[in-house]
Image 1 (cartoon, rainbow, N blue to C red):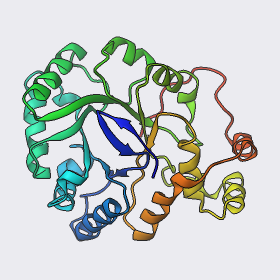
Image 2 (cartoon, helix red, strand yellow):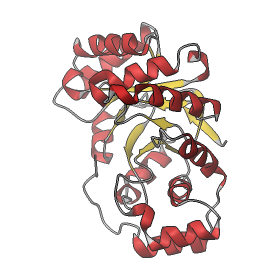
Image 3 (cartoon, rainbow, N blue to C red):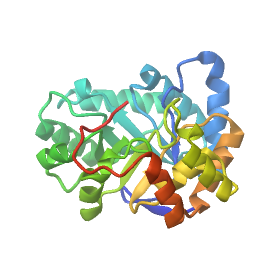
Length: 273
């Protein structure tokens, strides 16, 4: 598995997302086992948030990493409405309790909110100094938001990115690459849309004897400094995801995918889900 540096840690370029986990108690054991299988496959970066299942996903993560905490790099996110001087430490403590750990490797602001960024950063820094988090970062920030933040301590920005959603290539991704800030791509294989049935994706998949999901992941990872965090519960899907990092797309492959979703020629609003 290829790796890169994120928040002072060496992480795989493919991790595990947990959005929509923790919402159905009947799925809890399958979700726990899926995360554990992923860890065994080398997908040791786990991304979650207090928003996912209103804490349920963090509880799933807590069960999955029991006895394995030293093997994983743990990322969680705080709601913007909790991102105040007093709200962040309280939210962090709840997340720590749900995940049954005393340390979050990387703690993110889930999207820009109403509290001043200076106040949020101050609270993040106090958590770091107290040993509750290793580094902090942001999610769903556009270039203008990062310029407003203006803080070199920000470890990452997590945004929507896949072949159908490539608006960030116009300015956000180049900006982050220029300052050597890793980008975490959520929904890298789309979200219940037609991405995986697209003729171009299917043709490229056939060329590589791969699945459409693997091609979408390989496409995302063709960019420097990008980490993909797909969510999977099926053990087969986890193995497929893990193997995607080995696929190298050719120029012809990329041009074919471009024919369905061209690179952006102008600035567009940042997409979010």
